[in-house]
Amino acid sequence: MFRIGNGIDFHKLIHEPFRPLMLAGVEVKSEYAFLGHSDADVILHAVSDAILGALSLGDIGQHFPDTDPSIKNMDSSVITKKCISLITERGWKLVNVDCTYVGDLPKINPIRSELIQSLANILSLPLDCVSIKATTSEGMGALGRSEGVMVMATVLLEKSSKK
Ligand SMILES: [Zn+2]
Image 1 (spheres, rainbow, N blue to C red):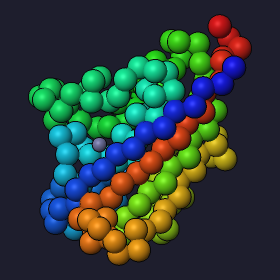
Image 2 (image 1 turned 30 degrees about the horizontal axis):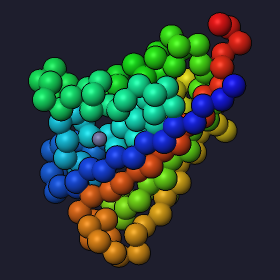
Image 3 (image 1 turned 180 degrees about the horizontal axis):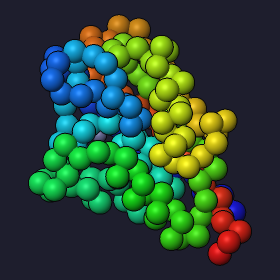
């Protein structure tokens, strides 16, 4: 028994040297940051939404509304770990995660292995079950003008043998 889920998230990029730029739980050195109510970790949000999708449990906006003052500047790994606990509670197990990042800034290549390591750690998955790919929109539209980034994530769940 398997289940698949996909998630997509966008965040606006702002010039803000004093706000940390968070990606997959890693604080990336940059003069830019993502705008958002929580820490705006676009990779963790897309992965969390994909997990909720696989479980048919709505989206992260329902579970973590951006009107909730308690999640202001919140570490998004808390959101992702909550989604992982929902997988376990319902008798499923996460198999693998594949993410595609679309954007020009920040560049993913130089930090890819650090991001994968961090995401694998948050998801309690082996490294070879976590993928982060990157592409650009070839200069087209808002993403091409580096006004923000988009991440798509796909997750696979399988029925846990423990339940
Ligand atoms: Zn988000």
